[in-house]
Image 1 (spheres, rainbow, N blue to C red):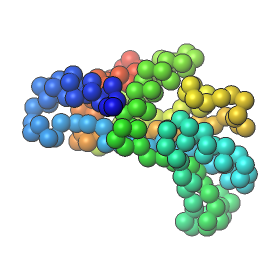
Image 2: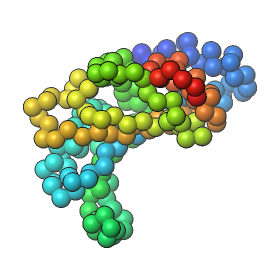
Image 3: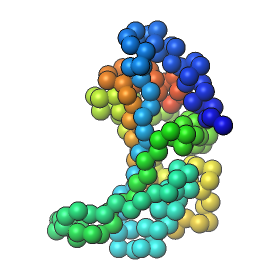
Image 4: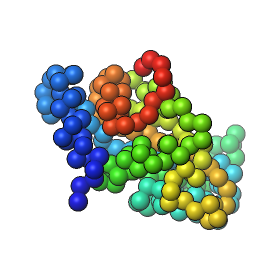
Length: 182
């Protein structure tokens, strides 16, 4: 069964993008991948806390998260080669559309005093990055199972070449942006 966001993209969003940005139909902007990442910070030394973060991100994403290991030692950050420095998960296909739908329609509206995501999160190549302060906004997360609250970075990679096209794609998908300019 296809995701409802994917069905909406094919039926409603893609024709609008093709009319607003006329070019080859195969070059119409779409979401390629979503990367959810969490820096370990003080959890680097506590394996139980790191495992709790990994389990939480896996639960949120609907797919197993992996530990990111340091490739080099950095004395200034007290990091040695082989230490875990974070957790990440890359979503593509069906899981990506399910997560994006859940993020737009359920999780972001649950944030207290939410006024929209900052429009300055575009990187110049059509990708959008933003951070969330805590994981408790997602309905899968049980408050009693959390050892310590943590934030996360979410990066939405699109096939759009320009930020204007990527902004329009995400706006049509339903990402709530703050008022202002791109």
